[in-house]
Amino acid sequence: MKIAIGCDQGGLVLKTAVKACIESLGHTFVDFGTDTEKSCDYPDFALTVAEKVADGTFDKGILLCGTGIGMAICANKVKGIRAATCADEFSAKATAAHNDSNILTMGGRVVDTALAQKIVTLWLTTPYEGGRHQRRLDKIAAVENKYFK
Image 1: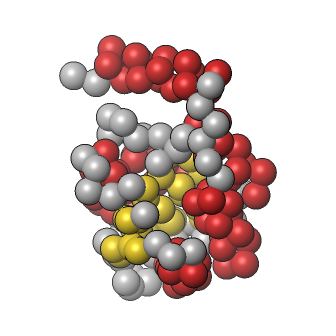
Image 2: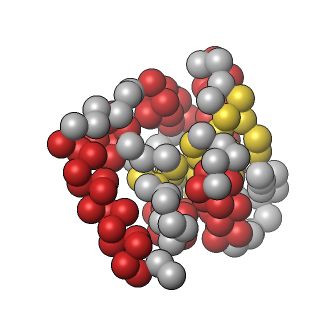
Image 3: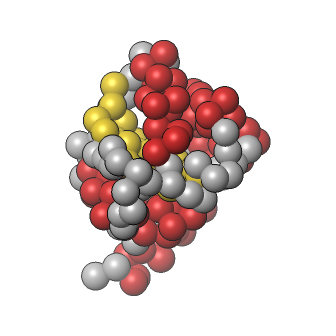
């Protein structure tokens, strides 16, 4: 898989661990920044990654900020994106299996690097179950089609 990564200064602490985890699983990534602890605006990175995932340039994306929440809010404004904020292993597995999420968001002020690696591993290795879950994703797509012009 090709994975797009982005973060603001709040997620910088997790980025090295996340990149190492992705590589250990045999996937590739492109890092869209930031690379500094200087304050920056998370929507800039969220939009870049979300657009790259939505247009198929990348299979999935991972966005990191202080909580993961702002990144998810912004990324989910892009049609076709299903960004999920996870701070525990159960949620990571569930969002992969049930929501077919294509962007994972986490917070550097919420999870430590060891937990972040566990979350990434589960999210990337848990297959989407389809079945009854697809009906629900189709309904989400219908909402997008209604409101995204």
